[in-house]
Image (cartoon, rainbow, N blue to C red; front, side, top):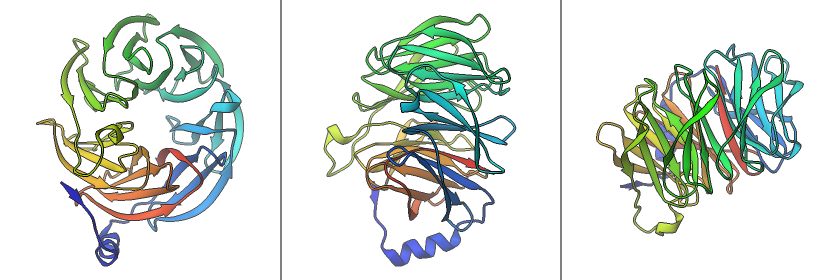
Length: 321
């Protein structure tokens, strides 16, 4: 099912969105900047210049700092949210793209695409704690809610690599489909959702056994199969829905997590890449890398309600309450 909405309907829906205090930070890959969006008014409030080719961004455990992968500068920059100033850099290894922060905020797990390793940074000491060899072209990173597992996806090896954070060892690999780009744990830590861009699927992996339990495919009337390229994944706050960004298909798939069936496709901007949820879980924001905008989705109504222009090639997104 595919929904398209006229301007009057979109304006009416936008007025029904609940007020949410917070700021959405969007990394603009081509502009070397972050765009700041007020999540209540849904308007751009500022721009911050950062390092070369910013991609992955995530919030510190205390909510006071933002970590930014400046990929072409081979570093992770640390931004003070209160002042909007860059404080210092963290070591990252070559070409950091995606990363994940341990729940306690002490370790940052960084995928280094160019040299096939995961670099683990001790955040308090600002030093590399250790590195783990993984597959070819590592990209996706996730840490389980209990902090016991760090997982990495390698685009060329087509695997999920399981790192035991206690022993600091790679202990298992799970085969998935071609070019896995993103990994996301469920809130209870029992499932791992992994997108495969070229394979056109999402695999749902049982964490206890590290085996694939479900494979989800996608089909949109009028869209070529080779355009259905799953990238970012975001699970709803209540765990009932999974949102999957379908890249050049320009849609977000809405998946029922109980049945693993696609219940809807939402038309967004061009080359939808990653997503962020508001703290209350009622609004989903998507970064659209070719149309250079952010789409705003009402999660309860499953409707796209607004498009917000940002910088060139928006990539990552995170909401700061």
